[in-house]
Amino acid sequence: MADSRSDRNEENRLDESSEQRPVPLGAFDVMGRIGSGGMANVYRGRHHDDTSQWLAIKCMKPKLATEDRFIEMFTREARLAKMLDHPAIVHTVDSGYVDGCHYIVMEYIAGQDLNNVLKRCHHTKRRLPVPHSLYIAAEISRALDFAHGLRDSEARPLNVVNRDVSPANVRLSYEGEVRLLDFGIAQAMMQVSSEIGILKGKFAYMSPEQIRGLPVNNRSDTFSLGIVLHEMLTGDRLFKEDSEFALMERVRQADVRAPSVFNKRITAEVDELVMSMLSRDAARRPSASEVEARLSMLLERYRFSPVELGEFVRGLFPADFRDERERTISPREDEEPAPIKKRRRKPPSVRTPVLGQEEEKHAWILEERPTAWGLFLAAALLTFIALGILLTVLL
Image (cartoon, rainbow, N blue to C red):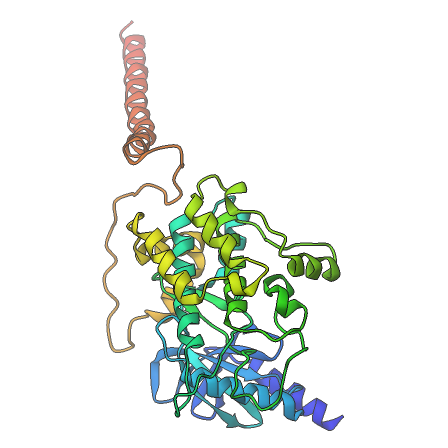
């Protein structure tokens, strides 16, 4: 009972932290919770010696830290995370144990996770553009290809499989960067105990072999990425059922239709790639490297820039971006704030899709005209009234 009360106190202590009331954790200051998972809570924080850089501090839930198997899983995740040094994978800064807390410190990515982006698109009746979807999937495949090819110090393959590729674990920055977040349930030869037969992760993003509790290889991640890409292209969940049993059965059968059935803008080449990734037979699925190569070829025709992705995310979450900007780009105490410049009025950021750029420009000009006409009519009316008064006096 005492240990349970102590666990709650430790978690509450961190949860009550804020930027105004930071809670020390070793060499770091914890400044408020920003997320939570099955095994850990994630907090925003900073290092004592570098207050210019925000960090994400992942703390194992105290109630799990009493069991050796959970501690083993968390420390194994920390060891693997430090080996995953790649531009498309969130960078791990530090890990350790202090004040009764097992923690992993990662770079903080100012932005939104893909799950939030897809939800906002659905609520605003928008769809993630095709080139944006292809680019995000290409970056995830780059990250997976790196992880799948990871070797130990003696050049032996580690056979890393993420096993949890899902929209919630993909971070999109406000600048257009893409990061794969979580290898927390990755299956690797470096683990001490076997996890075969134990279902982890999210049912709707598992491969057929994973849903059956069978051994998995890197082609399982290809299937999960295929689900994510399908959902980005169509704007809807691929596997959704009323019960977990029905959901698991649909995944096990790999019962899917091509994305072009739901989005007519999808080309046959994209359809072919997505359906090959979602093959029920793991041996017929392409590797992450092959997926990346094919996505890169498909992207060439769009002349896509990551800047476009950043603009899209900022447009979906203007208030969040503004808050993030104020938090991370605030003036130093010893500097005077820059003078606020008056800006000319600009067109609204949400544009009508049926208008081209030239039509939009003229439509915006037409929106400006009523103000000028209003002033003209008001002046004419005042002149008319003045003339009426003058004639009344003279007569």
